[in-house]
Each structure stands twice: as structure tokens, then as C-alpha cells.
Length: 289
Image 1: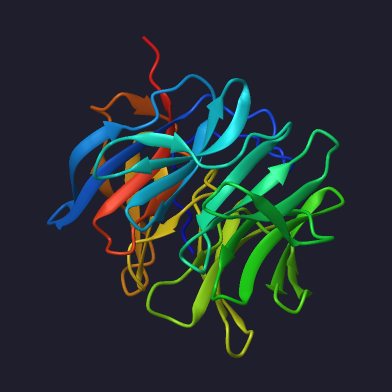
Image 2: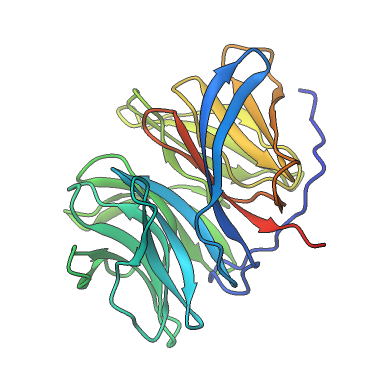
């Protein structure tokens, strides 16, 4: 397999979610074009000093982890009105990795307390919270259904991928040295995850949720950890200020999809696409003068 070398900045991210870069959240509309993707209605929705990252779509809103008074809180940006609000009750620690909960009402997030305790919590729409899974130091995760999630959890000096039935409080380890980008693949009974390979890059795998078998999809470019699904057969990622698409039925290469160098950011990290495939959000650093 020919490796595609991207010009990318490797972000040395702590498994404990500390020492994060100064990033903002950018939202845009996307549509297919002959050259890849057409970008419109581009905007910086956080425009806030500090760490604003980990965006995820939730019905008519975009959730993200954002800095407020020196703490990392969960923010909700209403796409229609353009307004933002904090939706968790402040704690002495920080909240990260927000997702809409499977019940479609509350949301979930990883909380890192000042004691070092790191757990996944469920938050009611009132802001109150409760631990979703005890005894697991969840770092990154995605839901498959109302009973099941796939998560990278802290294990010594690495992350391990575990499949969790959180209603039964049971879990099984799938693979060691997993990455942070975990997704439910649209319109399938499968999820995807990444594993650190012997070259120090991340490979994407598909996990069949019925058979529990995993299948190799492709390798992420050098220095890239994050990707998203545009559809059940196309993946997208960001590198520096450009977007690239991988087609499962294509040539086996990441192909350029959009050049965003005219916009005011650089060093794309997190990326997410809404369920309809019409909106994309990413976290990136503001360009310096």
C-alpha cells in the first residue's frame, strides 16, 4: 500500500486530556462538487481564547468542549439562532468529548476531576449528572445503540479499545493501543476505530457489531488522528487547512476535496459531519499574523 504523506502538525495529546492547544470551532455547509466538496456559510462559532474542540452534532445544535473562566465546559451552539450556552453545571474539574445521549434528550461527556478521577457521565437537560460507567477511565467513545458503546480507555500508558454494555455494566477488550477517533458507520451495523501501527501511524478498522469481527479499512496519513464518515462508503479528514476524502470503492488513496487556505485557520484536528451530510464542523488553530 502506498502511503500518502501529508504536511501535518502532530499534536502530542495527553491521554488525560490536558495541555490542549488553543483552538476554535468552525462550522460550514458542504455539498458534493466535481472537485470534491463545495464549502459555504463558513463561520467561527466559538471565537474564544483557549481550548474549544471536540465538536459533535446533536439534533439542531453543535456540542463542543469549550473554555470558560479557565475551565473546560460543555457548550451547545444553536445552529438556527447562532447562540451558544453552557449546558453542564460547573465543576472543579473539566468536561470533554460531549455527545448526544442515545435517549435523544440528555448528553454524555468525559469528566476529569481535580483528583485525577476520569469517568464518563450522563447529563440531564437540567445540567445534573451521574456516572454512566464505573471503574472505566473512558477517554474517547461513541454509541452504537441505547445499550452499547465503543470506547478507548486508559490502561497504564496506553489506550485500549473496549466494547461496553453499560446497562449490564459489562465490557470486553477488543484491541490494545487504540486511538481517539471512534464512530458509528452510517446506515450499517458496524462501527469504526483506529489502532496505532508499528510505523507510528493509525489504521482505521471496521467492527461488525453482530459478528464482532474487525476488518482493515485504510491507514490514516502521517500525523493524523481524526476522521469522520460522510456516508457509509466515504471518509473525510482535515490536514493543515485542507480536506481529503477516502472512498471505500475508489482507488485506495486519500484525495483532495477542498482547499480552505483562504480562511482564517490552520492545523485542523477534530472533524465531524452531521447525519444528513450537509454540515461539517472542525477544530483548528487560528492563523497568526
